[in-house]
Length: 434
Image (tube, rainbow, N blue to C red):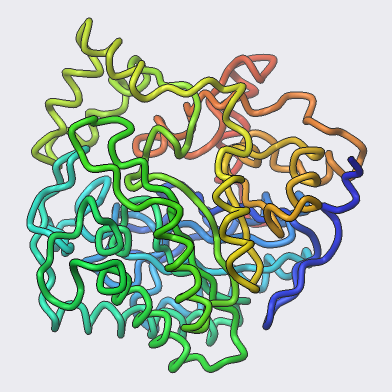
């Protein structure tokens, strides 16, 4: 299988990307508490632009103050943010790389609640089952405000000269909480049937279109299979691929230019990012969250104490050899149902697997997070003829375990000649502006 397919341009309705590799939405707590962006974030994004990716999907970017999942992530919740995103986009464009801003709202699912809003909005009053962050059921006025916030965020992204937006409808955040048959318990027009549960997302996409027009790129990320009971078996399974295929058809009708396929109705989730699960690493960093949710102390004890930690590890861990391409069957189902391009995430770092997935019609492009954190120049390694990088990502997920307490980077010491080399790689994001 020729890797040349990876380097073919991908044409969307309003956007062309030079190759089929997208940096998936990922970043650390690189910004000011109040959501102002920093040079550190610019440095982070430039790692991947220089490394050859066709497009960067920004990290999780809040459209309003209440929707934030964690302090110190750059936001797009007010016009004052536009100059920062303009500067970031211009720097990325210098490397012939596109930049798509991911618009997001956490709902009840957060990592560390902000000072202003300790309780999140949701389709339910129940706290999230994993960490127990508290929630209140959103009113109609709340939902109208959410739609306006997403539309305004898209307008700001366009004003900043960015190349498009991605509506984050996946991985347990607000739109998942409405879409999910396992979470949404409303009895009004935003709950019950699949059509009703999809209403908020579809109305939001239409509101964005009305704000930015038809000539600006808008894509949507979905967890096409929820696997809602993968970790806590007493929970509902949630939406299936059949449900999501119908939602994708509706999204295309509403004006979406692409679908980004993911998995899991929480984040993190055993299926996303799939791989190793270290209770020792969780114990070392989970203390950041101990006071945040009603279940966090329960989880901490579960990570720390035998035999509960062994049970949790068994429920969560996935064989690293089976990680790459886990979402491809879902992506193929979506691609067969829509006429717009389909991007898929899920442990990709092998050129032949990516090329095969594109050539057999499973997807049009892939998005990568961990593989690019491990090898920022992964695309250039493919171009040089490597099928796998010489030091591939091991799917150990140590990057995830450390992200709330430490700078984001690869923490697998096995991949480095020394701990000092690893630390230098992690800290390089703080270098002076390049």
